[in-house]
Image 1 (cartoon, rainbow, N blue to C red):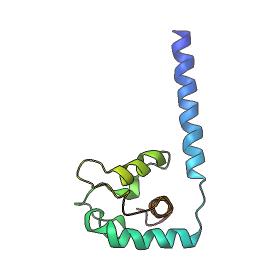
Image 2: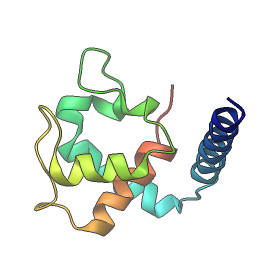
Image 3: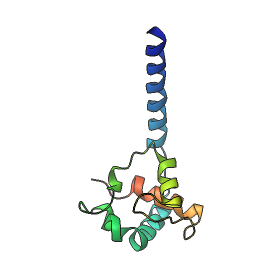
Image 4: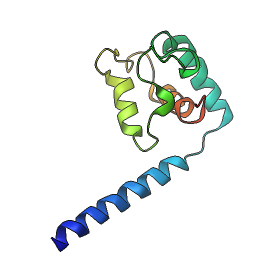
Length: 107
């Protein structure tokens, strides 16, 4: 029992640290602007303009900041109805999308 509690506390602490690190990620305004342009042209048809389409695909304004690898993987390889974009965008462009989603339009 004591070991299980220790593992649970350690897991929670690690998750908290990861979330704090993601929340502190800083983005250059030019990077956010570039991400916004890529988003507007390629992502807004499904996710809505400025990530605001309640009837659209996943609400990216609520994407968890501590799940960057999930975001990068979904954009690169696709997920469910979302097509893969890894052949269209290079890694730097996908990073700009991440910057826009994290620092751009929010609820």
